[in-house]
Length: 91
Image (cartoon, rainbow, N blue to C red; front, side):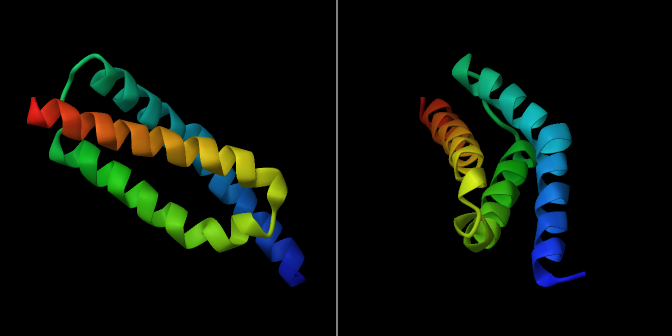
């Protein structure tokens, strides 16, 4: 498999994980914090892990402009949720 094919495979796996695992949970957490709820330690760890992963795959996304919009929207969703969760914690 050439490097382009390998990279396409990695992107496919990341997108599938995002669609089936991360996006549903992130949307549920957004609803929770938008309603004034607080996140527990497990929720916060999940969001921080996803943001860390996003930083690691950013160079790959930069090479594939077709994924830039999805990446940006996902990062904005996670950032909004963390920001709102912190606001809810501070009162």
